[in-house]
Length: 441
Image (cartoon, one colour):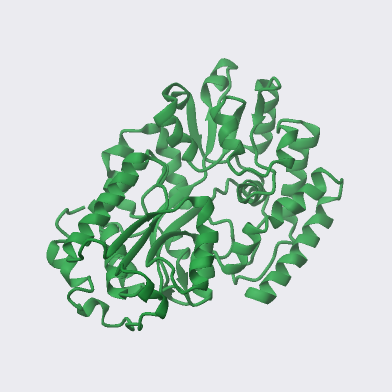
């Protein structure tokens, strides 16, 4: 990818300093009174990128942009915000009309804030990204699109591979199982409690929804039809619930304590502390091992999920840069987002996340960082073929509420804990989804 595609001249064309034609379609909103309380013309909220090197690169790029935009000291703010605090802080900021100008958002959050009228239409900036060599992965565009327009700049793909202890498999003369039936057989051969096979998240967490649906998809399940209508009550989801119940209750390859767990990072910690052989998780785990436990990292393989009757369907989610309409200087906010996403500059950040995030630009997988690491071969395929948790439809405000209210794991717990049959639990969950859709859809 050419390194001179985005020059300083391009920069000046895409910032508020010049009032460039590239942003002529944007309605410049009068600053709210709340903006008088802040001195900054540009405020960026930074969520951790999971490695110090990536965080440092993003902060350096922010200050480079600020300098090139001609802002004075005190006119721009780089604010560090933790992932767990983002939703609460953002809700409070929106209530007072003082959200950040730019922040990284999860896919369902993009659709939620878009539906509430808070996010700018950044279609022109996304079209520029699409025109780069190789273009953008389709999954990343689904996450930010609505009725032919884009309301966020895709920032990173987040595939959910199966992390597997290849040393444990080799010790037992086994290979990674390619079907869910083989997965159970393999698990029973390798586990010796308190060392369990599968660190599946089954608590009331967002990760549990993801883990559960990954199994259901492989049995033909889905949450919405391809028109975005609720369709949770289907045979595939029932079969998926039944199979998970077999793994948990009959075969006992999943630790029983996970059902009462409310900590999203439980499965991360279980794998990192060598308590389980398999987890289905984004590569925050692998990135952690790269920096903290090289020995375990070398014993870890990244694979697609095993196949069920409907094949192997893998998950992917997308993080994007949202630009808020309440920005005091809209062109500055848009300019910063575009600056971050220039391919060469962006690649510097992505490769420093140690595989925690993967690029939205397909050609960046040709970078030596990826080609020199054969363990990412299947991982890259997930990035190309994965589906969002809202499958068969794009992410939406409805799917976002389903995720945040833990409706799916709550339904499964009825089966695992209370002995409710899977069809009944699925039917009741479907009615709740229909109600959410009636309110938000």
